[in-house]
Image (cartoon, rainbow over all chains, first blue to last red; front, side):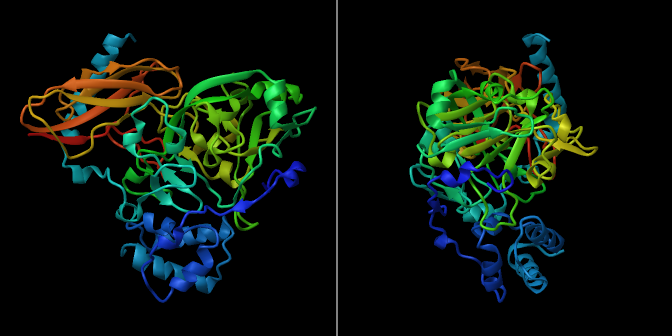
Length: 97
Length: 402
């Protein structure tokens, strides 16, 4: 609703819902960076996005994806956190170079 | 080209491809990523029957293949695809549709009642298919929702013609694109809002609708209630759900979702409909649905009874040129025979088909291959592209008769 702003938008009876689906069933692989993943990524999307995009991505692929999430989608990850995310995703959901 | 010579050409093409088709399955790469197979499950969203969950939030759920047995896909089995996770529940009585933009001289602010009362109501049966349907079979795999076969459905849509609404809004002659925005948004202000546009000529096509009804019922929440855009023949990225704004533009829309996403390399696909205001030297927006088919009642690796008729059923569809034939092979592509086509439900609809054969004891590889009014057919080998679009690779299903 942002790009083309409407005066009528405010007249909706918004009752913003999450997907209401039970994503607590998602079990991510453990690792010292898992808390960083949850903190930086799960505000916008469930972590099954990571699971289904495995396992074929090398480090450079996860680097590009993390970068896209930050520069295009606005993820608020710091450079330090981005490095941790790439380490975790490559190790737990990627493949070696 | 008449149908007879067309079929002959198809058979000739297959003879060439035959040796490739006999490669071991593992070399064909037609399998979802291991992580997608591990994380998928059947899950019922509120108001839906169980669908295959790809992601919870935003919700991306696909229809199991066995549910495509009927020409019209039931609303509660229809696939769900959202880009952004904030999806409001909209009271249809409070909903408003804003129609304006710099190429509209008489902007409108329509209620659902006005939309239904002030314009002629029309219905059309049309396939709604995600651009990335079958992306999960891409080889090599590519990032995105790892769809198998079910990010699509066929429904009877009821609404009004977009061209009628644009006319009332005073559409200017120099409009180039019509942009749609839905009520959904991302969790962060910084996330690009999902706004899409189509060329003005496609917006003025009599089949392009603003629809509020699907298969005789109000649109389900997950499929865009109270109203969505319907663009028959084109992939679902343009079928804006929960549409709240329609803008006639004198300049091309340049946001992320148009300029960067949903693009195919130029020159790889035989697409007829062009989107010239968005083309670059390298790529162009995806437009039409490629000709395709799905075998709906046979699963890979299934057993059949030797000596008994095996009925292979499925659906075929394309961008609206019309399904002219479906050929089936049971010997991995060495010989093809015409399937029997079912009733024609309109040029944008699924076309049912079936093929009966009597297997002797042994192993069979069953494939179907649809062709359309342009003479286009499905491909034997994936036409790789970075986003995994336009996958119409012929399926290969192993059947053992015992």
